[in-house]
Length: 99
Image 1: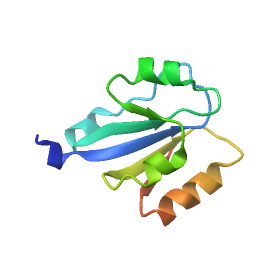
Image 2: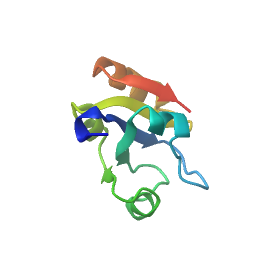
Image 3: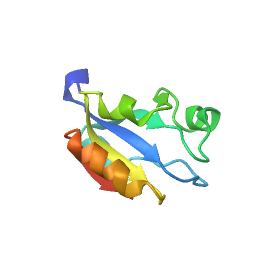
Image 4: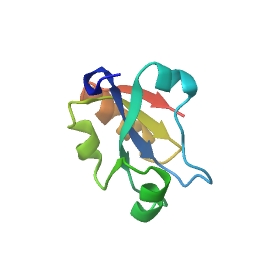
């Protein structure tokens, strides 16, 4: 699969998980690839880098929302600002999935 064929994902982990969030086999087969992870709340930059090698770890939501290559934003976990994150992502023209 060529680089142009990938459908890029931005991951926003709004709470600490015990394990990294992984893409399903179906998502991978359909060309989805994790491009950026937002390190916030309890997910430290170091932990994000170790869980998602080769993925850019960012410290600002805008870095995901303003990336034209990212089509899908995955919001993982619950937080007080979850609805605001979803609103901002949809206003930026992104598809959103909450897990």
